Image 1 (tube, helix red, strand yellow):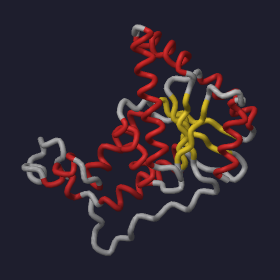
Image 2: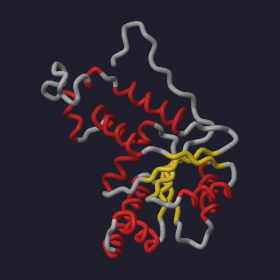
Image 3: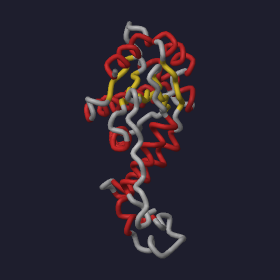
Image 4: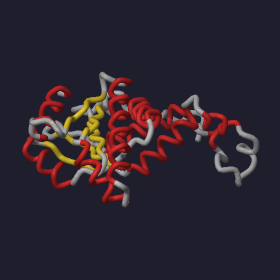
Length: 218
């Protein structure tokens, strides 16, 4: 809601001691990630809820974006009809919402500490290029210092995982995995300064790949 006259503005959270990192993957065994983090050293893994982040992203799009949801801010009935799904949204201040999202991310979901890296884990396959880039636009808008790491698993391994999880034909799963990996690469192309690709199929141990990315972010 709008701040009342004379009230203090919402405080801007202090800068994190280290930039937050979010590892985006598509169902990789958590035990594998935890083992790699332990070997990389001083890395704490924090699971992130994709449904919660998606809801924040949708509200951010309505308040701050230029997409279709922007029209709901002034949609018919949004001001005077409590039954309208976006009732009251015109009373929200976009800047305050962004500040609140920043606080949620940097103080609660990914609280940073000077002695250890906090690496958020997001099990989030991006079903389209726009979906991937839209998520990055949202995260980087509310927290410009954050870094995203998109894990690229070996196609055969990922396809078997998708086929088992969704009861799909293996060929269909392979086609899907290739598309998802293209979307991850598009994410990197759109935000090369904030996104890193982590190749899980290389000869390099996963722990070393994580350590290298953390070293870059230091």
